[in-house]
Amino acid sequence: MVLVACIIATLMVAIDAGILNLVIPAIHAEFNPAQSTIGLLSSISTLMLAAFILGGGTLGDLYGRRRFILIGTSGILTMAVLSMLAPGPGTLIGIRALDGIFQAMVNPLVLAILTVTFDDEERPKALGIYGASLGIMGGLSSLIIQFFNQSMGWRSVFLLVIGLGILTIFLMWRFVPESKAAGERKIDGVGILLCAAGLFALVFGISRASGPGGFFSGAVLAPVLIGLIILAGFIWWESRVEVPALELSLFRKPAFSLGCLLVLLLAFAQTGTFFHLSNYFQVLLKHSPVQSALMLMPLTLSLFFFSIMVGPMVGRFQVRTLVVIGTTTFALGLFLFSRLVNPGLSIWTVILPMLLLGAGYSIANIPRMNALLSSAPSSLAGTASATNNAVVQLGNALGVAVTVSLVTTFGRNHYLGELEKAGLDQEQITRVTGLLREILKTDVPSISAKFAVPVDRLEGLMGNYQAAFTTGVTRMFLVAALAFVPVILLLWFWLKSPGRARKSDSGEAGK
Image (cartoon, rainbow, N blue to C red; front, side, top):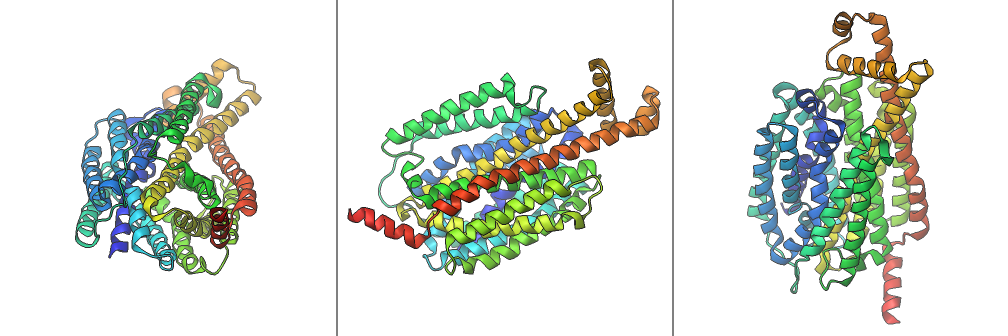
């Protein structure tokens, strides 16, 4: 029942953190926000979760893990109700930012409870069940969310979060014993605030890259540079403070440091894939929200089945072997998406890359997570879990912010390039772009009648738009796939098996 309680709590946070990604087209239709606002709406919750998750892990270790899961869940319930009542995108961004802070009180402590509840022999099996359950329940919840969205509007989707929150409070209160870390610890308030400020500036800057200036505009470079400077100050502070929020000593172990790097990229690519495929199915292919969720089910089912299979394999195969095979499979799935996505695609076109993506993620992630958690002493279970989850959530936040900017940049450059090839000057390009915006708000016949432009010419304009949209998405997938190549090489040459790592540590201790 402890495992069940942890699964439901994590599912609640996972759904809550990514819930807006699934209903962005509906929010866009109601508020028509700027593209940078869309990026913030999609990423602000996971960004704040990543920024404050180290503090959540420390608070739980210090004052009680179950206690802070209950406090955080109560806050998530409150924010879900307020999100349903939000009058505009600005208010919704503020609510979702607070929501991310409450998620940070729950997310790291779930894995910490699993770590202290299950021993080394049971933990891989528990993590396999944990991952498989989250995979299948996450897929079914996506279907439920889109059903609510389609039938009752995007605000109703928060009812699922409210239901899971109530269930989490009951299960945690009834079945999970309280646990704390041994000894006294302090809260590194300065470190937590520096981490939050640095990550916010970094992701905020990246989210603005969808503007006209692209990634090299001042609106992007200034906040990104400020964020990097603050994060450098954060690392310096953590190396000097007596009780840091981020235990830098953990990163001296290859299993921990490489595990964090890998899951950063996995979360980045996985979140970007879900976001853009769902958006592509709804916006370009004109599928309903429920149809889009059904088209993503092969990916969810693949995550589920391979999570069950991989758990028992962790003790029988080298960690490096499983992780490299999984990561390579995942990258291959991304590469196939970059070749196969097109305006005429069907479920059969993308079923193979979806299966590869789900299989690769599970095969790489479960042994990675077990090796990472096992590399930390039990006194730092909450901190190690929080660090792992902070990296996951940072990957999720960057996965939306960066990929939205990449897709927009690639798509816009392709679209404008085609217009320039056709011989249009800047004034004509501006007029054509304005017509396209009007078409996307209504339909071709209405705009034809309103502006006295022939229908066939407007249909050609829509064809250029579809080609640009597709180019943006496929090039994003290609960039994501190529990013895994150096990581696979690092994993193969530097990642040690737990047995070899323990022998090495023992030798250093003897010296």
